Image (tube, rainbow, N blue to C red; front, side, top):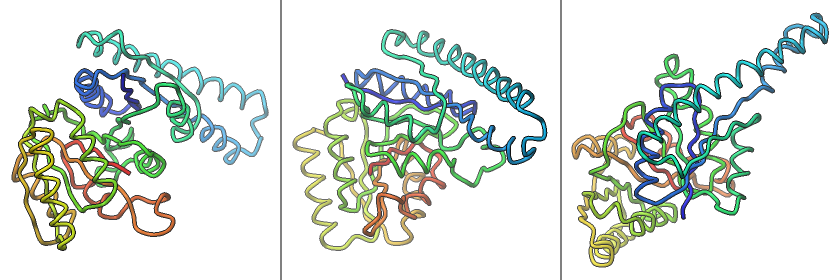
Length: 282
């Protein structure tokens, strides 16, 4: 059985994230770990910085305990809401809610090292401050993308059924892993799949032809290929809108010797522009 790690917070992205997770989990026959993380350290450090101990240890402890209590109650509310969603979808025997304290990037390593591992991470495009930062990606999202070695599904604030899929192809190793993911998951057989190459050279064109023929013959998938010239993020977004895509699949990487520390600028631009969910492979 496969495993999906659903990362949630108190934002309005939690509901569409859960809907996509339930749909994919059912199609993949996957177990779901729901993860809510409380970052209490930032609160404690801010109290120390602002008051320098002037409040006294007892008052500081009361403030810290109060924050802990509020976070526990918030986690319980989120757990109740998501439990109802999974139960209503009749997927209530294959998920678990997990509340942890710390940094999300450190904590999801725990799940990756579990015997079941993690095949897919699902998280919202933005976090709880999304109303104030509509033009920016969530800071947690960028941290997870940098640290993750498994694919991440980045979800917008609205759910839509997955019928048309766009793959941004550049011949890179991350995209090749994405194509293997598509080939191995049966639910793509019912999807219309478009593969787009922007500014391709001859090597990329040859790879695109081979991929198209392989997916058509081996996986029996409905494949459409296309080439565009222009700025990568703009062309991918434009094509996705033209074909009314429901899902974008792409590589997320940067060139250079320390590329594991970064996410490519084209990747971030596409994520900012996209109004549909994106599966990013490292």
